[in-house]
Image: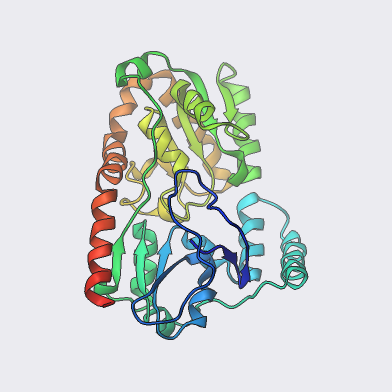
Length: 318
């Protein structure tokens, strides 16, 4: 394990996660036979090496797209529903941060450069982007980190203990949409409670999702997203935006009519749908069986996909 960020090397004598058994690397040796795996958010490291086999693991396409600081500032402003002028302030803040910390702004931009590397992806959304950049199928492989579900309850026990709760993650939500949705529900369905998932332990998140009848996600889906996958596993009915990976039927395989554009005229139909999902909860849960199966498949195939990747390395990096 080698720790660094945008060209800055971090010195540490231990790995950051207790369950990781990797050793700490003091340097990266640019010699044939070595492999370096970087996240899509920090591909600049690959530009430093000529002989090493470079691999990019695409966990969040949005992180790559926002390597461009203006795009990062603009997108965050739009998704949070802030005034447009706030994008300029964010952009200046990002630029000053890079100057102050001496971070490198280099990243793999050109399609020709991207085509030199091997790509692991965790969503069809990212794979489709890479194909459009000229990455061929023999340089692409699916590898999605599975969720770790915390439960000893069976499905019926979870369903029987549901309450009239809508759970949501406020961190990435469009603030204007969230405000309007809460106001609508308070007016027409005051018995419904909202619980925000923020500052919770893993156990508290699990307990909240076990109780909630609906999980609402108003954010951008840069990848498969952890909390929606946990929510559907705990038999929440799901309502999302239609942004990012939620726009296709592979990464978030729920009925198309449960995905909404982040605009004012979506508020009423979204709220009425959630009200139906709460009042007639059991009638909707089977609509998410495909999504639950998809999440379970990710858990079951992860080790096999790692083996496939290792086989590729052995064959192509001797």
